Length: 580
Image (cartoon, rainbow, N blue to C red; front, side, top):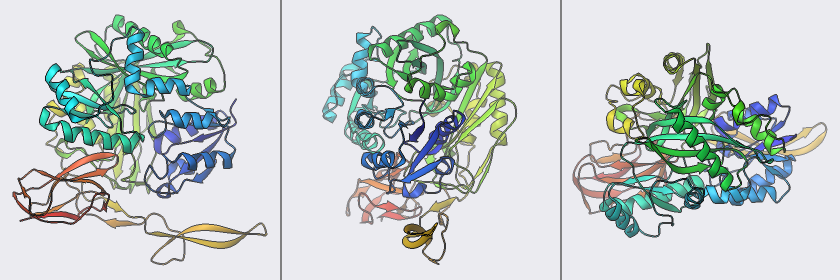
């Protein structure tokens, strides 16, 4: 069995992995950026090592820093979590080349399935049809236009080395092709470290249904059951459930067998998920995620299996102790992702800040996987998932009602969350009937009853790093302390400063001074001084919490000043452009 596992991730998934490790008697190692020094995953681990930096590229995507932490800690295995390096072939090889166990599939399987283009080819070779699309990396916007004109609009640009909706843009006509491709490539590079993208048809009313697989090194590959992840916004999941509603048993079996074929075709080992789009009784291969999924707890609740435990056991060389006929699914599980977003008006605007209050739900059949607690800061630099609220019930309706009750018990203050939107989704007759699709949230639901969340606290780390000399057990050593700049006398928690009232979306102020309603980084400036703009025209694009947000002018006029440059960090309320 493994002795010490370094979790190369942060937040909820790092805490989740560490908890199972502790139950199994395995020591855990955390790594952290400068902003995560006091975070929950650092507090949970047995030991922790600094990566340095603030952005993902400087920290959790810094291979050399992580490798140094592995060497310093003596970890004999690495769990990548999801996102960051979880589907990066080079990272997996860097780990295994040092004789350290990578808790995931072989690098060769990641290479085939981590690249969504080669995964489509592998699935086709295994006899599993995919969504119609191009099996080459996009080189220009003209290729997007040609595909759209040939197959019809809209089309979907997708990150070749990503998932979870990151780096995916829907193009509804040729005039959107260039800007959509540029945006998709930026997001893909920021979140996955690779900018490559490809094209697929965008289906009209599909359901997103995925199949959990588990494979050991002894030749056994099993499908454990499906998850319906159709309730989405911006192609990112909000609510997941298992089993899928109104899903014929014969289709479930066929999809499970197809998932096993795809897994075996690439020599897959460990836990993975094969994703499909389901429409009009037919299903199409979408992609394979060569890692643990965010929504894995719903499968755990209906099967009674700890998927992280089996990841660890398989990585240690153990064989699965059960076969396909032994997999039993009981009851119904649902999960909502609690994201730091303000859903007012259906805009789902990022809401970084300091969590000032976090009261957690309880009672029968309720599970909360959190990566934050009261007093923790949700940074603009990372994914905005605060926690996952998961429930189990004897049937779908009981699970739905239990989830609504658990949401009512959950209180989070200091940042806006998606919980009010989740209540609307779960209470809608379409969701109750199980007739929703991946486009349903954005095209059919009314979030006008949701008002902007009152002012949260913007974040600015004002601490100063100082080296001081101390004696530890009689030995003179130098240590680094982070001191409050105001007093420079004692360690301090992350400082906070007031921010403007949180807007319902990324909007200008209406006065001619276009300001941003959240912290973030300016990634693109679309206007210049002297240019005429119309009301609603995008003037800058702001990246916050790994999402791009268009900041529009609220009035027509002429740009008189541009006060930021690409790459600048801005705070809530900062004026970026003036229009007269």
